[in-house]
Length: 66
Image (cartoon, rainbow, N blue to C red; front, side):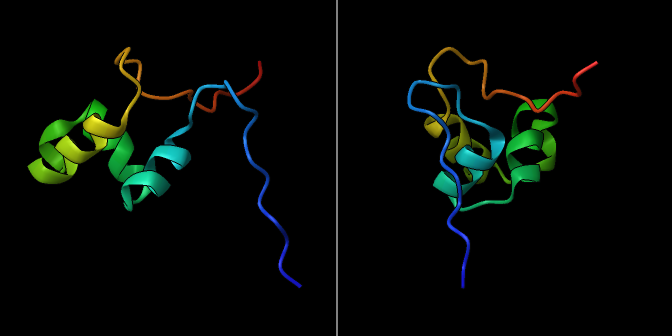
């Protein structure tokens, strides 16, 4: 039996995992495309940027709850 993946609520900010799935890349590639652009293939980085939200604030980060 395969567990169904939970979907994020409609209207919430996408995560790097959502963007990675949409672009067909690893979540680490999404992170690097914004934090260290030279570490990602230029075509891949462009595809990730094209799919990201228009505000440029890429995605909601998973931060520790301190």
